[in-house]
Image (cartoon, rainbow, N blue to C red; front, side, top):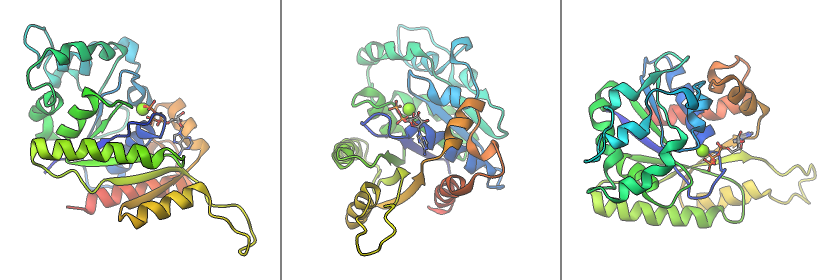
Length: 268
Ligand SMILES: Nc1ncnc2c1ncn2[C@@H]1O[C@H](COP(=O)(O)OP(=O)(O)OP(=O)(O)O)[C@@H](O)[C@H]1O
Ligand SMILES: [Mg+2]
């Protein structure tokens, strides 16, 4: 059965795209011949460039696949929009800047919250995992992504506003769970750019913001994964490859993504 996972947070710049692309890399690297599709649902097209594809030269993108679902517009079937990447068994439904104009089209369309789900229906059978990179959006992009997903991974930064953003996302998930009648929660948290307190003296040691937020989340019974800050993220984006396929020495960053991929692969 295909697992469809949305990487979502209403707050921007928390690591949604980075987490999505790198978990995709480690899912295909597991050696169980999993087929993975990354769906770039963000007009910024960062997952597209992160997988080495130039969004300005695309013949078709998710924009065309969305139009294909909307009466009165001429689109292109999703199968024609999906591309292979340089990573074996990792495919991409790419995005482009035009996608930002799609909200107007979506608003005029019936069943506007289930469009992404309808786009993915014919291709689900080919993939073990579909990972959706969701923009920092509190509108139809987010609702469509949650409707299409059966799990949600929330990359969080260690900021004061992180828990507020999580609470807001939970409200959206509640609404979609009620509307669609399928379970999205509990959400899985990735505390991105996690850092421990640097003080060496145990007595004086104050928890770092990452540690404080981690404790708060654990108290609320969330599953929390920690991903450290690493220059390899930058290098892999430069190369248009996930970290898993960039170099053999991926250190703690690679271990962190690998652990998340393993937990996705072994959970029901
Ligand atoms: N673990 C990390 N180590 C170092 N840099 C990171 C890490 N995670 C993310 N970054 C950097 O932080 C920035 C934001 O990450 P990213 O684009 O993945 O966030 P996002 O949530 O997808 O943003 P947006 O809301 O714009 O879609 C990027 O420049 C990325 O390279
Ligand atoms: Mg992003």
